[in-house]
Image (cartoon, rainbow, N blue to C red; front, top):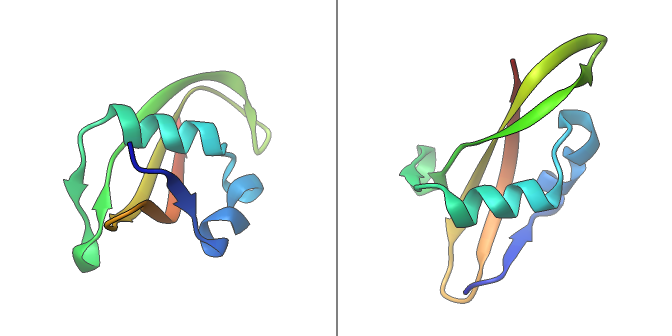
Length: 84
């Protein structure tokens, strides 16, 4: 199993977009990968949220990492989160 590494860019969004490294790893390891822009890959995973984000209550959070698979590791370029 290849290690997963977040770039500095992806890490800079941890708090602003409200995701955790564990959620990113769970998404990559458990969900199907699909092609993304610029030859990258992406996947999506929904998590039960049931909390407030930006002063609004949401039941679900979706985490969508964008990454590349290299020979020895998976490198996460950025992560998007969606609340609903």
